[in-house]
Image (tube, rainbow, N blue to C red; front, top):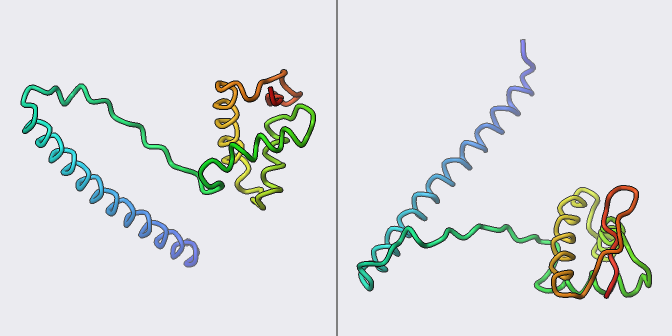
Length: 142
């Protein structure tokens, strides 16, 4: 026979998830109605407009680690202060230390940092000089 505390925890979790599903279903219906209203308004102004040609914009969840533009400056500061090339992992460790971010957020933080570094690379602010033994890129200020 199953332990009552296990069953109790599982039913509580199921209840929570079912509530989230119901909430998000309602949100989806509300968003769908808003899209239909906007489509009708577009057609009101331009009856021949091809609504299907409008590309869907991807939703991106913003991280809570940084304020707007803070990560960009912080990463550049870390690279400048180091005075030597740093791996993505080293940069993440420095950011975690600076911001007081716990180890449980390391993967998400590294992903954010990598995205920012690639954006900075496209802008010509940073470059890579190779990879470390773990396969992490080594970054340097250009």
